[in-house]
Amino acid sequence: MKSINDVLCLHGILDFVYSWFVDWQLSTSSNKCNIVGISKPTFSSFRHRYYTGYEHIMMSDSMSDIGVLIDLSLCFSDHISNITRKAHQRAFLILRRFTSKDRSMLVKALSRMSGLY
Image (cartoon, rainbow, N blue to C red; front, side, top):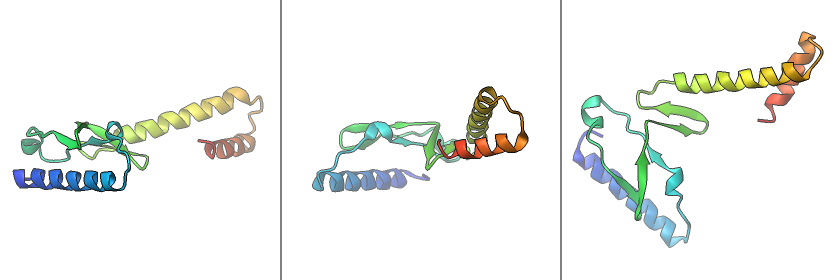
């Protein structure tokens, strides 16, 4: 957002979406929503409060969208760390449960297990 007009435009869009939800008798989950301000440091310190109806939408330093963790600087190091941590957990679980150390068996077990998560 470069100016206050951008902020007002976003407020208008949120109001429009909220009105659409109300018209169609749909509930909103503001507690599942958050706003991540991706901008230059000069404007990011100028934060506004956004609402859906009367519920405040929280500002956040990062968020997950379709499984990808995004942060303020568009750096994916946290996302990569989460993925590698999960991979290590799965590998440890397989190695702990299997007595065989046959590489082909372990690869098959890991490929079948990755479909479960």
